[in-house]
Amino acid sequence: MARGNWATLEDRRLIRFAMKARMLDRAEELELAISWQQERDEHALKVLTESHLRLAVATASKYRHYGLLVSDLIQEGTVGLMEAAYRFEISKEVRFSTYASWWVRAAVQDYVLRNWSIVRTGTTSAHKALFFNLKRLKARMGVDPDRPLSFVARSQIADEMGVKIRDVEAMEGRLTASDRSLNAPLADESAQEWQDLLVSESMQPDEAYIETHDGNTKTALIEDAMTHLTERETYIIRERQLKENGVTLAVLGQQLGISKERVRQLEAQALDKLKQALVRRVGDPVIAGLAEG
Image (cartoon, helix red, strand yellow):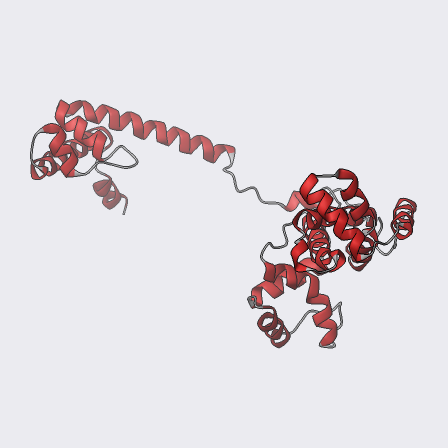
């Protein structure tokens, strides 16, 4: 449905059907609710929900300005009616319409939040309330709907709705901006699209190659250097230094039958051997840096 239109032909047919449904008295709706809850009588559920479709229509009309099909909003309201029929507490002695109105409104609001924009709007009750009430609050403050809120106004709304000021600012931006296709041109008759301005967060091909090459080179150097270690030293280095979650000195000591202090000495000895082996292969980086300086 285009923004600003109240209803399509299909919507009007659905509305006429809802308005023609016979209204039930208290005894009838109570009998139908009992038949559905206790006997799972689907015909009773059908009659009960259809007789209250005008409630779904009335609720849908309040949210028609969000650019969604009225028929879809009514159908979501019908889902709320069915949920209300399932949860209706007969012992409370309230009319079904009074109880169902909350479920219908919740179902319609959830649908609006899920489909109004491809960007997730908010899931907490406070953010939902902010979404549906921000325009009303701006109007109450006498703020032009096309003008941004002042810091003071945002603070007042944040306090009233129980959210942070940045949440009000973000929601205001979302409500005043519509979704835009990344394939849309930047300007009329422009060959450049909005997606052309997106910056990729992944590595460039040359950067990825350099990182992979350097990583493979470092791995080969370390593996070669470890050939200078004894079997026990190699085991300690692999368990302590080359694993994501290295084992403790105490655990290694138990595994090797030595004290954890001895494990620490062997680890330091092995690391020193590795350093000497790497310096022989690639030179001392400290000395190289001083020479370049």
